[in-house]
Every structure is written in C-alpha cells, then in structure tokens.
Amino acid sequence: MNRDATQSHAELLVQDGISRAIIEELQRNGRQSYAAVAKEVGLSEAAVRQRIQKLIEAQVMKIVAVTDPMQLGFTRQAMVLIRSHGDLTATADRVAELPNVDYCVVTAGRTDILAEVVCTDDEDLLETINTIRQIEGVASSETLTYLSLRKQEYDWGTK
Amino acid sequence: MNRDATQSHAELLVQDGISRAIIEELQRNGRQSYAAVAKEVGLSEAAVRQRIQKLIEAQVMKIVAVTDPMQLGFTRQAMVLIRSHGDLTATADRVAELPNVDYCVVTAGRTDILAEVVCTDDEDLLETINTIRQIEGVASSETLTYLSLRKQEYDWGTK
DNA sequence: AGTGAAACGACCGTAGA
DNA sequence: TCTACGGTCGTTTCACT
Image (cartoon, rainbow over all chains, first blue to last red; front, side, top):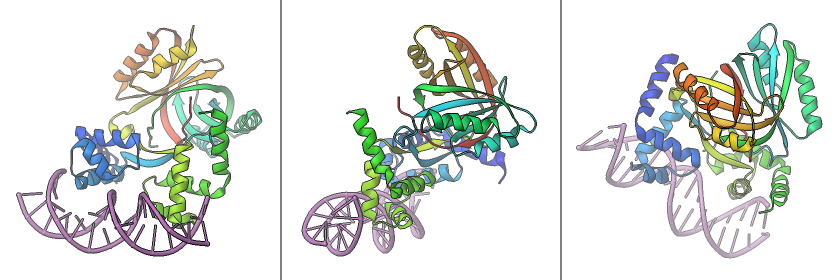
C-alpha cells in the first residue's frame, strides 16, 4: 500500500477529536469494552467499534500487553550509545537481534545507534555490553545505566 | 504494599511457563478473547482469565493502546541527553512534564537524564529543545535525532 | 488452582437514516 | 459515518474437583 495514502488517511481519522478521546481511553485500559468507551466519548457502541478497527487497520495504534521488566526479574536497564563504522542499519539490526535489546534506533549526532538493554543483574549487563562491542560494525560504546524512570508513554514508531 | 512481597509474588506467577506464553500472546494482540488465548496455551478459558487478572493486579503487565507518532503527525523524534546540576529527580520530573517528552529516565554516566521527544516538525523540535534547556536544573543538552527505528518492544518500568 | 455449565453481557453483521 | 437491533459468541459466576 502507498505510504502517503495510508498516512493522510490516518490523519483524517484522527483529525476528529473523538478518535483522540477513544485512543486516550484505550491508553488507560486497552481491554475495556467498546460499550464502556462509547459511554465515555458519547457515541454508539458500533461507531466506536468501527473507529477502533480502522485505527488498528491503519496502524495508527495497536493494543498490546506491556510488561514491567522489574517484575519479570530484569532489574538492570541501561541505554547503550554506540558509534559505528560501515553500514549503519546493518549494524543496528545486528544489535537489535540480541534478546536483551528491547529498543534500537539509528540516530544523527555524536552517536550513531541507541540501544536500550534489559538485564537480570550486573553480570548479565556486562555480558550484554561485551556482546554488543564485539558485533561487526560497532566501533565503540558508552553505557548509561538507569537509576530512575520518571515518565513512560506508549508510542510506537514505524521503520 | 510491600515491594518485595509484590515482586516475589510476581515472580511466582511467571515462573510457570504458561503465564509467559499468555503474556506473549497478549503482546501480539492485547484484545483477543480469553478463549482464544486459552486455546493457544492449552488451558481452560476461566483459568487463563484468572491468570491474566492476577498478572495485571500484580502489575506484571498491563494492556494498553500503543500509538505510532508518525501516523499522528509527529514526524520528528529525538533523544535529548541532559546534564543537570542540583536535584536530579526534580529536574527530570520538570523535563518529564513537557507534553512533547514521552520518555524520561535518570541515568548514571556522562549524562544525567535521557528524554525522548516527539515533535511534529523541525520547528517544534527546536522549540522543545529550547524549552528543555531553560528548565531549572538543566546545565546542558545534546540532541540525537532519530533516523530509523529498528526494534521496539513494550516493556514498562516502575519508578 | 483448574474445570464445566448456565445466565449474562459484549460483540458483530445488517439495515436504514 | 452514525444509530438500531438481533443472532452469536465471549465472559462471568458458581458449584465441584
């Protein structure tokens, strides 16, 4: 499908404040019934259902389970700043392949690649960083360990 | 509630591989029926529902709508690395208050605070960075604009 | 903690404005 | 694109294992 067509379609969908309100409701609880959302935004259940389905089809949003790494035993998180040589995206994709990497983005600036890692403990973190540093295309890395998460919203970026 | 008690409870909940499987299913589609998940993991619908409710109550996961900033017209994303003076968490919280900031974490390392920003265009990005730099406690900042997102998983960290 | 069954409520297609 | 409505399927409760 044409990317621009999809995008303009999506923007039309959301220009309406009601869709924004629907998204906000689902950001609080993604499993509430269409009827409950309908009551909040003042529309019929069927209309809300249609809008939600279109928003998901147009890939404006998706409804997923989000987990707390701490509760799953991953007590160490960090952002690894990577300088790369050669093919940026290929290197980034190799980094992204690691199971401990939950977020990976190519950036412009002093650093080429950002990778967020989720580890069980310091030993796991060290191993992960060491693995990253040996990946082909990784020139150097710098690790910023997380001390306190202050804000987390759920956006979803496309490639 | 006692944090350790909550955590050990959560770990008990997930030690069972079935809960892992349930979480994985819901990470693919958070709105599918309990019956559909039950069929996948080989348990009765009622048992799956109980587990999901407990996982949510124990804050191991939550089911929410995740949006694509691009589709909502936010075409510029960046990670802002902030050096701070004075109270770290207070400064981080002031940064986190900005609507354009969707992610904010206090780190150990060369940089004190990481803030991911989501902006409509370059002008919006410039304004946002300028605003951040004038926040009390922000000493300096460095911006890494996003070129290509390669991986995104949905974890949720507690403060 | 899991199962099974019956009452209830949500979901979904269709028709019409 | 919305509302209205009925058939169907999912959810919930409860008694039992």
